Length: 493
Image 1 (spheres, one colour):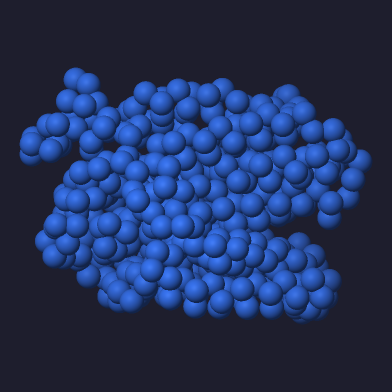
Image 2: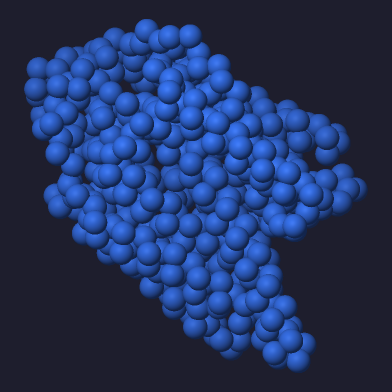
């Protein structure tokens, strides 16, 4: 059956078939995996890049920071660009930019060149996830959105976990150039599949671009991200303080401009909905704990167990397996019971894994860590996509394309603050434990990790408590808007 036939059957009310959206799903999943993998692979490549380029960690760290800044800056533009030029066209352009940036990175001869090429990657990569999620959400019928979004969530979980394995393998058995070159065939496949299967979404009539929003949003998100990056080293430094002040002022001005604009770059009015605000804050808290595990568990394995990056990556695979196993269940339970019950259980499991890790001792073996990560993996699989889908469902249907860039941009900033804050807290606790343990570095490091895992667990527990307040969306109230939003997506395949 052709794409047009599938569309027609949907319009006529025929039963939904998961097979009908597997083409678009495949294009978006491949693109998302490429972007997410690249972000995690770079973290273990910095020492090798420093050696090959003969430069310092402060200089090479900008290859990550510049990418993050570009990523944060372009996310708010996703909504306006997709309305103006069409989701399919912009999605394919972003994949092309990311792939081209990857190719350029592989040929970089100096740190400065690599930093510039990473910015090109970030400009493309920043819009892949929000645009892809909006496309798939609109393609799925209301009673199947949890299951469909659960499938889409798999690459979002596989990327951060498999990145260290892939990066470690390429760095050990090839050269650093291949951590970028590997994106070339993946990007080409994503573009070809997208050209064939992605639906042609009808372009919307949009007003002139929200100029002040476009100017203030990148300034706010980029400077806040930079402040957090610098704050991880020294919160009292001039760079950190100035960037933080500029970022906060720009953010406040951005909020004022967006609330007064008829067609804003980011639709902040959606925060007037208590259900939406509750859902997104719950998502922020669970994400803070989630990324705590991604950052500090591998760090623990390398600094305490002295594992190589490749072995560390393999040690995380049980967590990935549990996430992949429980994610489909999370989607189905969401469709049946709503977000509250499954989110509470899932986020509570993430917290339980963190609290279990907080009790770790110097003589605790690898099995202890694997058990904790498997508990967290199950929690991630159950909770992540139900919370994200709930946020999309409680937002007005016709604003879904604007909500995904909003949530993605906010998440970048929230995660940055969480990671920097936890890292700073851990550094402080290392110093404190060194004084208490008379300079015993090994014991002090384990104790500091335990304290950090405890704080991450508390953050997750707060998210689980907040999830108790989530209410099932009243889809019927927005049925007309839902139909209007679906029709343009389904037409013109």
